[in-house]
Image 1: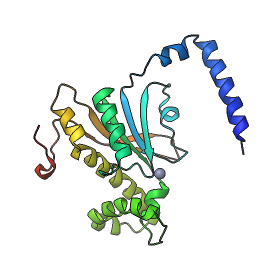
Image 2: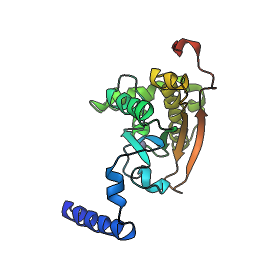
Image 3: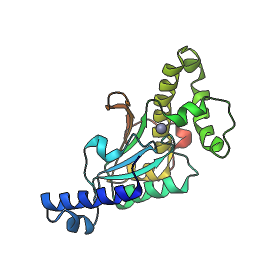
Image 4: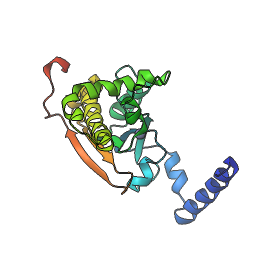
Length: 209
Ligand SMILES: [Zn+2]
């Protein structure tokens, strides 16, 4: 197990290497950011946005929470989304989940887990919406992985329901929103769903702009 001192030492070595390769690396980054992507991912330590997409600092604006949720009362997520869409004008927003997600698996159990019950309840609603399909999968791992996928798709719909995304779709800036799933066992990202300003949205969720 690494100590925090080792992390600080590794950071110094990393910064030195960056400057050796590109002398203006940090001075250019310090001038500001212009990322094209917003990543809404799971907090799981095995799914780091920049490493698995081989991107550099400055390329992806990131928000992570347990099980990559888009919850309409989450001021943290909504603030990140508004800033990314309206100020940074990102071109793509990705909801990125992963197979074997501990948050999703916990939502399938009845165990009382304390405060996180309230967060996991949002995933339980996704189970309820898809009960027939999920109950038909006898293998527990396969059922969990299918719920991972369905949860990602539902969070993309939740993004489309926000006034932030709908407003942006009514201006010249029209970001595309994506649902991606990451395979822990092969390191591969796969697209499950994509929505843009031409996508159908249930009228009950539509705002007038
Ligand atoms: Zn997870």
